Image 1: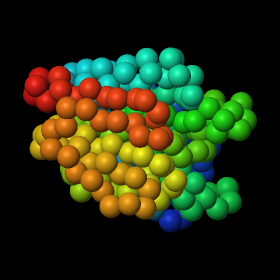
Image 2 (image 1 turned 90 degrees about the vertical axis):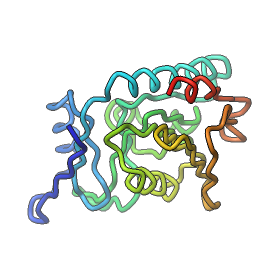
Image 3 (image 1 turned 180 degrees about the vertical axis):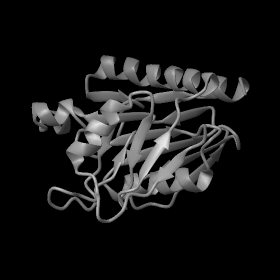
Image 4 (image 1 turned 30 degrees about the vertical axis):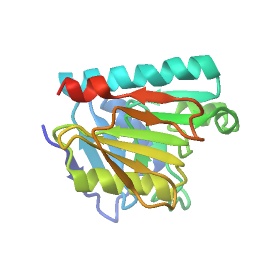
Length: 202
């Protein structure tokens, strides 16, 4: 199954609560919503992508357990980005990065209800691992959206083209060819992601 985009009529937009209920009613799908209110339906990942996601996420979990600097989230977590939220029916995006990290004090500032549902916060860091159904243009647009909403550091891993794009706020995107390591810089202090195995296994 490919990624599907469903356009909702202007006369029948979903409230944030209705979107949350829709996602809960369809647990086998990853559902995102862009700033235009369109729904993006993504199938479960295949075995190769799922395995690489898990391996990469584990490195973040281990680092975070050692540093206790924040919270790590996997691809099942949907974040409500702050763009365009107005009134009961908002145009905010709801996105599910493959890996996300939020600084502890920012997470602690949310209410219990906000933490339980789709957290209304842009992560400090996001990672997107492209799957075979993803297009580079769509993935890049999503990364730009993250940056515009306050994400400080983002990595787009393109296994097909053996490249990694690094996004840093208002700076130009840096593209690396099959890097063996990625450093978390000031956002993820002392974190290093080993990727040599990632390219060797492809």
